[in-house]
Amino acid sequence: LNDYYMSRSYKDALQVLDIFSTRFVSHADKIPKTRTYVNLLGVPLEKLPVIHIAGTKGKGSTCAFLENILLKHKLSTGVFTSPHLVNVNERIRLNGKPISNELFCRYFWECHDTLQLHTPGFFQFMVAVAFRVFHEEKVDAVIVEVGIGGRDDATNIVSPLVCGISSLGYDHQNVLGNTLGEIAEKKAGIMKPGVGVYTVEQNQEAMETLIRCAKNVGVPLKVIPPLEKLLPDPSRTFHLGIDGEHQKNNASLAVMLSREFMLQRTSRVLRTSKEEPPLNEEVLSEEEKSGLMETEHPGRCQIVELPSRGIRLLIDGAHTIE
Image (cartoon, rainbow, N blue to C red; front, side, top):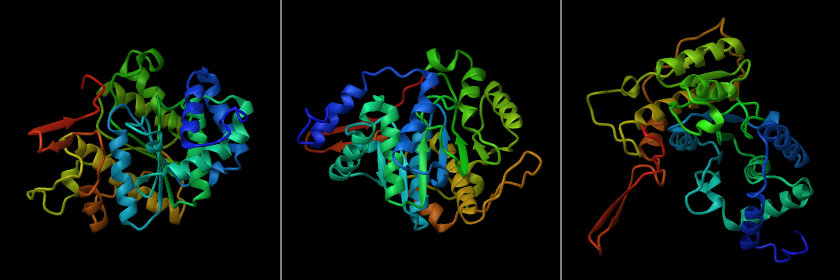
């Protein structure tokens, strides 16, 4: 590939990614291969300050809310998310914005030159590139959205400071299973000993599975409070930056994750099932409030006005029956 793509342009990078996307990677190989790639790139995984988020619905919105809250706390952020809407750069964000074509090209070709002989798949390669970017750019917080499932996902090589699991439902059943219990067990695969886990209210079968998995790992599973409980005056209207009643759970999850992260980055506290401090249900701080209100997430209950044509579009990337 090196000889063929001599210009090493952004367009060339996209063509190489198209080749990578045709490569089959077995579930058993995803994690060990991705860990090998990241190690070859010189990224110390244990030092990345990661927040790891799984779920069926809402994990992308949770990442967006969380990113904005941390930015309001004056922290630099890196976010790895998928899929992208328009440009592949959207998968890697720095301080609230997709990385530029120039920066993407720089890191892409650096990683390509190191890894091309290992024939990486698309998603595993993008994970490796993202982690290299976050390490080199020395971000304060790394928000990682799981691709599919959790247990066998390529992102599940991190040593997170906190984990989150958003709403669970039916999706990718050919990979994750046909019951909510089976799906929840795969999602719960991101749980790590000593690391706090936060989730939203779930279907009974899914919640029972998450509780069992947390107990097996030896960590407390905390269910977030309703967003209204965090508002200084619940009777007053509070507008989230992303529309939709369902976004309240995602916003509350983001708040809880940000609070745990802020605690863990300053003084590491091992979480065990024997020690379960109460949820921090203090009212929203100014940083949290403005972060939630100003969050933008294209393709999620997004309204696009085309006044010259008299058209109003509602764009939403919903992909499950719920």
